[in-house]
Image (cartoon, rainbow, N blue to C red):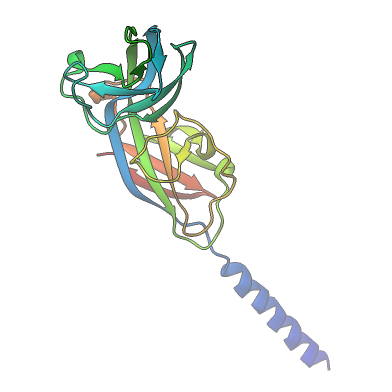
Length: 221
């Protein structure tokens, strides 16, 4: 009986060790990294205009408003026919602007009186780094307990860089956290980080992500 009890104990202990050793570690993969140089990250109202009607949209142009440039888009609100505030940047843009001096912002708002004065805007540019990240493991990831490092320094909590979940076709928000509390196996999400500089020479070279002590990294193109 004692021998049987000892064998049972050893078997149970071995099974516990196997179960403990088989616990899956988090597995995160950086699928893509995009470095958007001279992205429009802010819009300032220069003149508010008058007698305007929606659509209340702002677009970028290199030919004084004739054509749309580089997919930038933003929205604004109206108060008594005047621009009240810029409500949201829908897309920071997708390319290095070839000639920043000729880049201007315009609106497709309507003229409600036949004599409307259209608003003017000033733009703020920075370099934005986007990383498309996928949970390819079998464990759930908590963004508040995970960290992102740029060139190996200045760790930033992952949750503060989560921007949206549809990939870098629409660059939403500006370093804004969301309601995402967990990332489950198979989830794909995007991190965005706006640099303090828009100088090409100051761009980051590598993005690293730490989840429960496990690191994944990718060079910034």
